[in-house]
Image 1: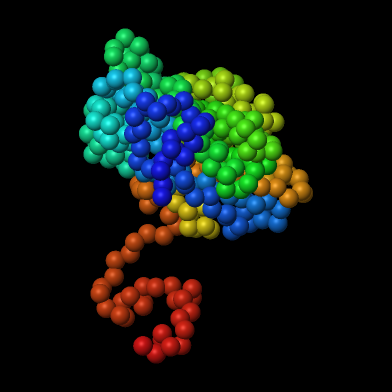
Image 2 (image 1 turned 90 degrees about the vertical axis):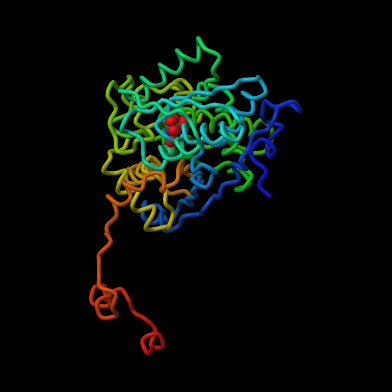
Length: 366
Ligand code: F0G
């Protein structure tokens, strides 16, 4: 039975018997081997690629891991209201866990830049949703200012409990594979998650649960790549709205993860992201939101450069959010579209591309 990350990893988390656990049975997400995607990446012969599909969490993203802990600790402390800025997924998780705990929730979103699924979640869970006239970075500044001077609990990843909860994804990967992978690839926006994974991998190694740590490979969108460019980006731009962030709060954590692990942080264009987004869905049947395609595109780029050499290796990729979060983007990107036909056998058969359809003789005879 799924018990949630606090019960599963209690010994590694800052909770006591007095902490009221607010959970939606998050975590325990699948690690899916992806040989067809590996072939698409051009590394099929030598790399084993595994997808950590975080879209399978209760609100459809990795944010649930951090939010179960942040909300549990907020309740323990006696908070009544929580608040966050968000590109969408944090607000969906905050609204859901706040509803479960009976807390009020306020979210600040960059107006007009949040994927439809995410907005629908914050609204249906009853959060007060404000669309600010600015990007995520401005929204987070406002939230820090307001929570600093009001009795309102900040639940962005600058809240350390968020990072603590999110590190459990690294634990799960090691528990499933039996050791840490050689490489771990993931998208980077506000940089809390790469900070959390690196913390998790290090802690598991110290505890003797893993013999090694992976090289961390972070990927940003080219129009929102402050960590790669070395300076904040004032007007970040990318179709991967989840990671449209110009001044990551966990900047230092991301750089430490990169340098301590012997990894890298690189950037990929929106074109590369969209190509990888479609490839992931069509080669493996895994539907993840556009931001998750950044590391997939990044791996393809590294493979083309010969980065992985010839030795066999294992790479895990975090797919941070479900594709259903952003249905508009899927419909706009898909190679096919719905076509209207009359409801007759002849019309349906005439409309189909029969070259790809080779039915068995018995079926034809029907
Ligand atoms: N992928 C998805 C789907 C996200 O929603 C986010 C961040 C990231 C990757 C990047 O993670 O910020 O820890 O580096 N979303 C935040 C939000 C900013 O508000 O939902 P990060």
